[in-house]
Length: 337
Image (cartoon, rainbow, N blue to C red; front, top):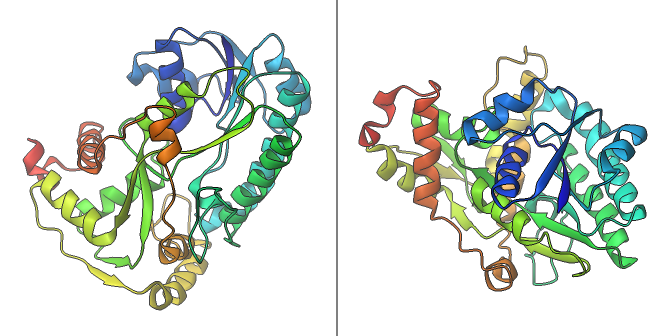
């Protein structure tokens, strides 16, 4: 199958491309910066030469990239809760989803895979097997909910749109030093001693890629799958990282309602600082954890046969990669030496 991947130079996108190529699919990438392709895919042992240089916000670029393909994986999005990038998030995510999914569906591609996020499902009162939409009103959260509305409207029309929902994504080889890896790095450095009460659905990037590969079947119609993973509390996260690193990592859990006002003040401060300065704790993350939404990932386990990597393995590989890439002092993880 000839598959277009948007966002193929990102963390999830890069691992997805590696999985598709490994399974024998013919992959095309829509990229803004072709020089980033070997930077992302090189460490994964993959080369892709079929590139269309363009932007997911440009209809003509997307149409050109879709021409001659059988399916599309739309993984391009601005994933961050950094308050300095709110305008970029608001400007990009929903519009890109509308353009890529809409043009792909109109062109008859099957399937049209939308890499969404569990943020689109996080809600007070819990979730359920039908995966009702979330209630986040923050910039990133709202962008994912509204993008999901676009996808579900196409599904309601019978279009073969498949929604895949990763949670907090862990694992090695993140080319952009994203939020989750950076948070793990700060915890291991002892600079993140406070955590919000509640929990979050964590997944491994390789399991995300496995789910996307598994749903690349035509003539199956619209479907939705939460990527299998683990609902993780602060206590579980820190205790697992302690075992992985071989160091005590004490922390304190505080109610989200206590932390949220403090972090809103931090958001305002960070908005005025240079981009290179960032403490990876924002009020949006506290809101997500505070909702403590447990999600049903059973369909991906049973229908697709995806068994997730353990939380310990994901965190060990994340930590090993942080050390190997020079982002973490080996002394912070003596158990790995």
